[in-house]
Image (cartoon, rainbow, N blue to C red; front, side, top):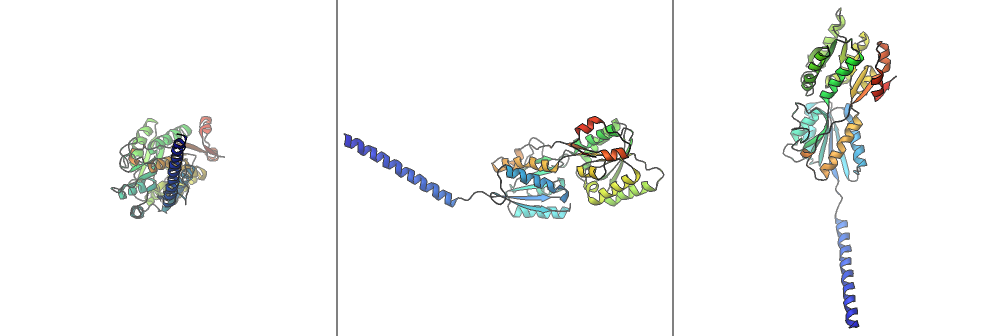
Length: 339
């Protein structure tokens, strides 16, 4: 009986040893043959002004464990707001069968959405206007192959009017020159017009087809006896934020001491009395968790669109030069103050 018991125990041990050996061999074989997934991400930037969004995205992806050159590679492509070039790059990403396209702001996002229809390639946009653009079905269920971080244009423009009314309540005629064909223009005007009226502000609208149209309007005001305006609000388009357009507006404002309600911090640094916008690094960082969800199997169109928080910037030096007293409450709220 003892012999049979020892024999049975020996057989059991041998069986476990064999099974363990097989498991180790299989693990080694699989380990040698399997390659870690390397995600390929195409990044399309509409203009160099927005490149910090890509930097924020990549930095947060690294924090989430996606190490560039190891398990993720990026193909960054830049345009100078040229629609044909946006479409070409979007098509190239599709032909390359990338795993994800990350794009910003509005116009390249629309080009990428069009190029990826029917391909299954997920798209994440950042700082793209979704109101009236047809980019998503809605915020909670964007639909299709797309999700992202929206440009909170309507909220920003209403905030800009409210800030102007609080800081310079005597400003009654406010110049807004804008690209009449830009996707963000109509949604901005829709919220600005009734709010301006409620605050006793007349919007001096200059719809433009080119930057030259804006320049011509401001040049005519320079020659007139009365400028016809008390302040300027920067609009959410390329005309206002291109180097050429911004220089035209800024030069006019500085020459005639007209306060500018600006946008990004650089506009405040350069001469706007205040600005309200979003930090681009943070905007890009908000997109990274969306990519992580997509890589882990969640369909892009089911991931809710994210909205970044606004920041307020004040140029205290410009305010003093214009004889404007900025309320203490606003100074405390400001993310950055130039002084």
